[in-house]
Image 1 (tube, rainbow, N blue to C red):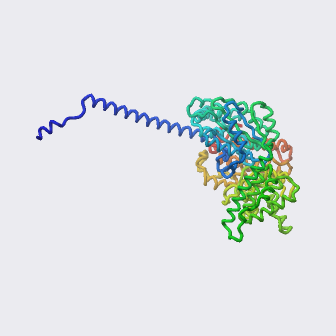
Image 2: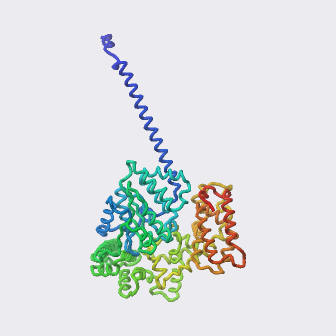
Image 3: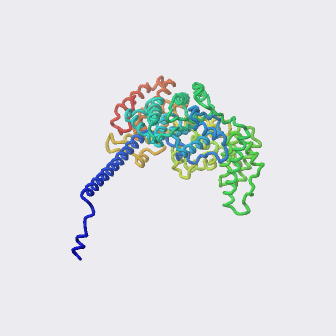
Length: 609
């Protein structure tokens, strides 16, 4: 029985079967190794692309979904319906013109529409890039980082574009220092065109450029409009939504490119449509204010269920039309939890009934005047003086500062800064932490302060002069050789980062180093200014350049030097009795940049005098 059992046990495979199985396993092994190798190559390529893209300098806060734009609104549901439909139809129409210019006066909701379209197209996966200009934030107020910011976003949103952007950087590492037209050609138009053949490339790509009028140089505005009009890309179709106020430089720019754009004038929308949208917004916001307040107070303090009443909403709507910013600002003012909403609402209504001023005065006047009601004359004068120094500085700064940094720049107590800002949450974004920057909620607040002749009028030139003096004071007291305590000359700047950089060059000193020339050149020259500027340059010129290099801003210091020389020449600075400082500035600049090996060398790429 056992012998029979042994004979019955046979190897189930024939020789040919075994050979075929082994060959099949070998092929599978080869395919697996090949796939793994491809994955490794793909990973290495992605790392290589990321490294190259990270070399592109970007304007912080410029994209629609950035932290800086995070709390800014999009259109309320069932408002701006026809306009949003019109813009989306233009994007989807293969035969429509490449540029859509949405223009409207301040406060009519252009940026809100831009953010709404950006979110819509992002959800539809054809948003390539967005750039929201913002005057007063230096990287968002000019074209210095405009193209690199868009190129980096395009590369991240379209995998096919990343390869060609990287190739452009490899071919010319200094491309970001070239003229804007060449940057746009090499970093945007060519990569988009070359990516057309790749299956992942969408049929159309949307680019959104908001608030072009907040780009500070008029020549840049006209140049950019011209560049965009000449960018013909058929696959993918590039569609550019561009918004601005109807300022002269923008109108001149579009006047030169007739026939290449579609336009829509926001403040010419039928008044009934605007009234409907503002009324819907106010009803929505007041419902939130009422419900939020009623949740935190006892029954005897609760607002009525129909508060503030239909007639009040109609009155507020009439006060607001056509300015959405009016509606948004008064809602922020009334919703401030430190006061009763009805009391704040009554202030707005009373001001509206007796105001003969502009709509901006009706918008911002009640908020500002609430600081000085029922106070003594002495307190009133002190409040206005502090306001002009602190808030005037905030609206004039080249880049936002925190309460801590601003107080040290202005040499005032942070408690005084906090006290003056306490009642301005409806017009300023004021973080809970003193170390985070205070920002304007809307540029029209700055417009109001520097143009309207009210108690709170800010003398822009005087504020620039004072900021320049404060910057020089800070730098004279803090700049020195080897400010970050490097172990030896020529160390990479990357080792001087984060806490070490901030310890050596705190935020207020960084601001002073970067922007003192900006403020100095905004004022009319006076002989008394010359001694202060000259003495600083004579003692601290190289210390200043060293500090900028530590901050990774050495290249930008060249623009400051050129601006300063132009300002000094226009002011006949060289003719003053204490010597020829223009030649001194040029000589020291050459010494600084020809001796760049004494400073972190990765800060000086692309520099030439």
